[in-house]
Structure formats: C-alpha cells, structure tokens
Amino acid sequence: MKAFTVMIKEIIDNLRDRQTVFYALLFGPVLLPLLIGGSIVASLKQLSIDFDVVTTVAVENRSSAPQLMEFLYSNNVDVVDAPDNPEQAVRRGDVDVVLKVMPAFGDNLRAGQPAPLTLFVNEADKESGKQARKIRALLSVYERTLNNLRMQHRGMDPNIFNTLDITQQDVSQDGAGGQLLASLLPFLLIVSMVMGGFYLAIDTTAGERERQSLEPLLTLPLRRRDLVLGKFGATFCFVLLSGLLTAISVFLLFKLFPTDLLGSNMRFDGITITKAFLLASPLLVFISAVLIAVSAFTRSTKEAQTYLGLLMVIPMAPFFALQFITIRNAVYSMPFPMLSQYQLLERVVLGDAIPALFIVLSVVGTLASAGLLLWLAFGLYSKDRILM
Amino acid sequence: MIIAEGLHKSFTKPGASNKEDKVVAVNNVSFSARDGEVTGLLGPNGAGKSTTLRMLATLIKPDAGNATIDGHHVVDDVFTVRNQLGFMPHNAGIYPRLTARENITYYARLCGLNKKATTRRLDELIEQLEMQGFIDRRALGYSQGQKTKVALARALVHQPQTIMLDEPTNGLDVMATRGLREIIRELAKQGHCILFSSHIMQEVAALCDHIAIISDGTIAIADSLEGIHRRTGESDLEDAFVRAIGEQP
Image 1 (cartoon, each protein chain N blue to C red):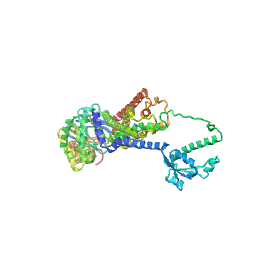
Image 2 (tube, chains in turn brown, green):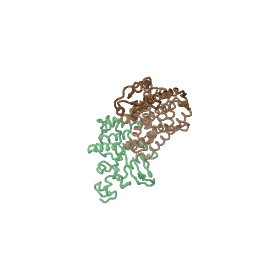
Image 3 (tube, each protein chain N blue to C red):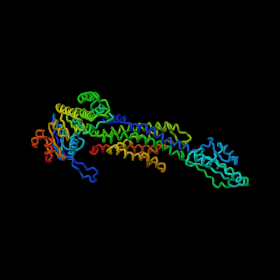
C-alpha cells in the first residue's frame, strides 16, 4: 500500500518534468521510429531499381547509335540530348548520368570490334549511381543480344559460351534486407522502453539522494523495500507507456511502408505487433529493474546518466551483433534478456514458428534476471551507504 | 524522551582501498533529552552532530552503544521509534515539482494517515506554521524560510512526540529565525521532546533548556545553560564552549 503511495507520487512528480516526459512520450515512440524507419525506407528506395518506371537519360551523339536508342526507348528510357559539357553537368547534378556514344561506335560495331561507349556518373551522388546501375543493366542485356546475333551470323550456337548454368535460390524467407527490417521492431521497442524509464529512474533514486530528500523519507515508518518497489513501479509505468506507444507508432509507420520493399513473408500487421509486444513484455520488468538498480547504486544524477548511458549500448548490442552473427541454435540464447527478445521478435515479424520452449526460457530467464536486480536494489537501500 | 548511551560510529574513508581504514565520526556519545524541553546539540562543523542525529533517527545503525526514544530501542524497535519521531534534515529536502500541500500529504500518507485525517492535519499545520500564502504553489521558487516551514510541517504531520531538527535555522533570515524559534518553544510547551542541533551559540543560548556540547565525536559537557556556566566558570556560552572542548579561551 505504501509502495503504491510512493509510486503515485513519483509518477505525478515526474509527469511535471519536461525531460522525463519528452523521452518517455516523444523520443522513443515518435522521433526514433521516424528517424530510423524513415532513413531505412529512404535507403531501400535508393537501392532498389524499378525498371517499370519511365526515366529520362541524356545521350551525347545519339544519332550514331539509332538501334541502341530504340532499345533504350523500348525499355522505358526516354532519350534526350546531352548538355554541352557532360562531365560538368553530371558533377553539378544537372543530369544524373550522361551516356556518350563515341565516334567510333558505328564503325567498330560493323567491323565486329568492341564498340566504345562512355557513361558519365557521379558515384558520390546516390541518384546518379542508381541511374548508372540501371543503364549498365540495360546495356548488358543489349550486349548479350548483340553477342547472340553475331554468333548466329557466323553459324555458331550462342550457348557455346554459356559454360555454366547457375541457379541461385534464396531459401531465407525474407531476403538480405529483411533481417535488418525485422530487427528494427525489437530495436525500436527496446530502446524506447529504456529511454521511457531512464530519467524517471534516475530522478527517483540518484536524484532523490542529490536533492537530499531521501534522508527525511527514510525516517518515516516505511519499509525500505516498499520504497524501492514504489520507485520500481513508477519506472515500470513509464517503460510500459513508452513501449506501448512505440508499438503503436511502429504499426502506423509500417502501414506507410511500400509493401514491395518488405520481404514477401514480413508482416507488421496489428496481430503481429501485439504478439511481438507480448513476447517483449517481460523486458518491461527487466528494464525497469536495471534502471532502478543501476541508478540506486550511483550518488548523483550525473553519475547515473554516465553509467546508464554506457548501459544503453546493451540494448543496441544484439541489434548490431545479429547483423553479423548467425545464431544457429537459438535455444542457448533464449534465457538471456534482450538477446532472446530480439530473436523472438524477429521470428514473429518474419512469420516463423516459435517453439513453446523458447518462450518459456525467454520469460523465465528475463524475469529471473529482473528479480536478481531488484534484490540488489533492496540490498543497496538497506545499507548506510545510501545516505552518504 | 531520548537517551543515548555510549554511541559509536565510524565510516570507511572515502576512496580507501582497505575497508579497515576508518574514520571515527562519533565516539562514546551519551546524553539525554527530556519531554517538554528543548535540548541543543552544540558543536563545530564536523563534530558528529548529524551522525548522532542520524543514529537516533534510525537512519544509520550505531557500531556500539545504545539509544532509546520513549523507551524504544532505535535499532531493534525501528518502526515504533519512527512512528513517534519527526525528523527534519539540515537542508529541507522537499520536492521542488510538488506543491507544499502535496509534499506534506505525501508524508502523511506514508505515515499511515487516511485521506480525512490528512486534510484535517494539513489545515492545522497551515494555520500553525502560517503557510496559507504558498501552500498550493510548487516548491521550486520557495524562499529558504518557506522550505523550512514545509519540511517542519512534514516532520510534524503524524504528531510525533519526539522532534529532531538538524541545523534548522541554516540560511534563514532574522525574522524567519525568530518565527521558527517561537514555533519550537510552542512545541516544547505542548510537551514534545525537542532535539536541536546547531553550531550557532546565540541560537542555542536563546532557545535551549538543556545543552550537550559535542566536539571531535564526543560529548564534552551536557547540562543546563546555568550548569554549563557554573561548571566552566565562564559567564559567556562562547567562552564556556571553547573551554569545554579543551581549547584555551
């Protein structure tokens, strides 16, 4: 009951603190998904080339290669005349690329020699690079067609140079970009949970010591364990709120995602996000416990911010590590908080089946770690040191 | 009634690598404070006043010695002691984002007062400490005097028999100090036992019925003001203080 009184007081107190409210309600749930989700969408859009979209390409000396121009036109490329100084124009960004048909093009082609073409591209400019890749891809199709024609003309089977017939089948259900997108959900959810409780935990523990309001509080007929539980409860509420809002905003964000950019099996619908949130929910307890235990250990808000700032690497670590490491047998990583939720949430997003054992291990491991941390915080508050 | 007998407390030196490397804060402190009286714990900075008060207020445990508040042991009977004790630390320690009313209500609820009792008690305290002007304003912009009043109201909210004030006049102007003195005298008259720590001679001389002079963690002398004058042979408390702590006047 007294723990509840402490909790309500800390919530009211911290709702009046702009910094705490900003990080709990805006940073994690709104800013972070927009910044990270937005930039990923943008980069995916830049990487993917859409051959169905009609684009315009500047070509110098186009009259020397009428058939090539015809080919480009039939492949959704509108050809226009190039500016006078193509190199300058591309560098300045007036045009994305310029294709220059060299004077020897027609003669070489007729003589059966390699016909020279120059493509001006600015690799520092992503749009230019993308356009160049598209043109190169089209040109190589054109080249293959010409090769085949030349060989048939000389009575040869064009397949004579196709010594290998390689078929690559991607068995992953999502493709390479998919894993990154799939790990985005746990990343956003976990980081904003941490940020949601970050300042409240610091304010209620290290902040209380710094303001020297802890001393009179501890002379009240109140068990120190109730005090810690109250502060933990208040932190939990903020972590929960921040997590919930982030789940909602991720759901809305992925509604705006172009579906063709997501892997065929990726899902960010309401049911998936709800499942993911439930699987991540033991982390609400764990993260609150980490925040309270660490900031209870520190003497000032500044010290707490330093330690917790370093700890912020931990929720991000699995995100980066899982980009490089493949954990084949996930059962060993399931008892570890954060790591297990990353993997479980990825599976949910990718629509993979999750064995019940994984869920049990993840929940038990995470809650046990949280219990241990809370027990540590109780211990810290029962020592004389808390008042020094 | 507070009785302290042979209290001892030492702390590990900050930054010491060896845990045995200790500094003695309080050594063999014995004194008593009676109900209906103001007892002053007088001593220079770092003499061990705050450590003594903290032990009596159940905040830290003494390494050796005994202390009782109204017969209840401060280590074994923590909750009974806390129920009968109002403690005000040397800086008000109030919550700046809460109003005075919220600050006091928080303590009332933690002391187990229900809603109705809290409201009634708050009305009494607002009247007694003249807090009408700022009771519903957030504490961030309070003057030192206003902060002290809120902290005192918090300490008094559960009507404790024993009240401990750690350097309560720190940072107060003349009028606020006089006002606080009046309140303390009134509380003593009502029969409360008041223990008051200070390093200011005039403060103690003006207010206290009984004085315990503490120096280097030990009680140098404990008596009434007249008793101290008589025993040291000095007519001025400052000279008596200097003599009592063993320096040449």
